[in-house]
Amino acid sequence: MSYLTNFNNESAKQILMDIIRCVNQPENSKKLSEAKASAGKEMILMMQHVFPLVMQLQLEVIKGHGFPGNREGLVQFSQLIREMERDDMEVARLRSQIRAIYLPPIAINTTNDILI
Image 1 (cartoon, rainbow, N blue to C red):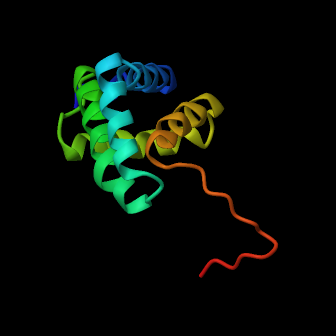
Image 2: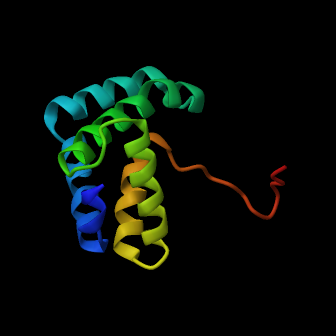
């Protein structure tokens, strides 16, 4: 857990930027584009095809920064980022960029729609 002693807002931003760069590498971008094309606009298919690819790329990046390269490491990293994004708009912006890859924007008419 020595990776946690050096983990701060700056290292969080660096890791998030590394994830974005990894996603944008040509081979990864191609895989994601194909997965998105096969999913179409179906959220369930996005979560089945695109989400796992993004999570795998995130695992590879965080492992390179000392986090465990498994589900627990990813959960731990995500929790730390969520805590930091409350106080750091840049962390929030970078996290939103990553989420936008697998969670497309949803238009909601707040005056007419009721969410249960």
